[in-house]
Length: 178
Image 1 (cartoon, rainbow, N blue to C red):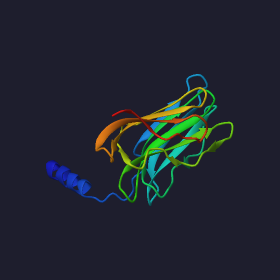
Image 2 (cartoon, rainbow, N blue to C red):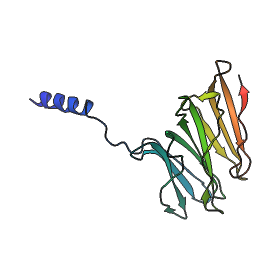
Image 3 (cartoon, rainbow, N blue to C red):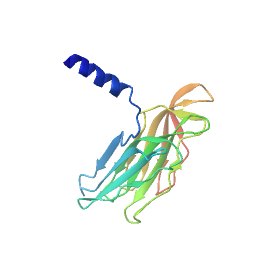
Image 4 (tube, helix red, strand yellow):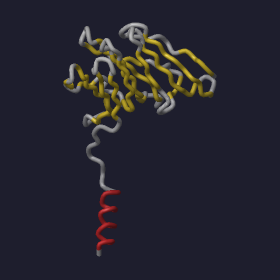
């Protein structure tokens, strides 16, 4: 009888429709000197997956805010922070027309207390390979992003890099290795 009950529970759970999915991937970073940090996660808002973030300042977590474009499927965030309180968050988003996987990014400046608008930072003629992207943030606020992507023009994978020398100013991606 116990085995039958377990089997019925398994079948009921296995085929039950998912009606609400919350945070799936959570990433966080903390500056070891100041103790300030950031957490970012993907979240289903009832319509679309979005990226939300909360900032840790002086031991207190701030209110969660949506930092991605709510009209684009956004998942798998990566985060970085530095001693001056600047933050970088990147994530993958799906191109709703072509179906390609793109990278989006935003930065936060503690002095300005503001997130920049999210930007498409990968190239439109490539599809970012899942879980290959990393983000680093220097003490001077410079952001470096590396990732692997399938190049549509050559049908090859490539190692790519993007640089953000100042708050909100992203360069075009460059190829590091074919």
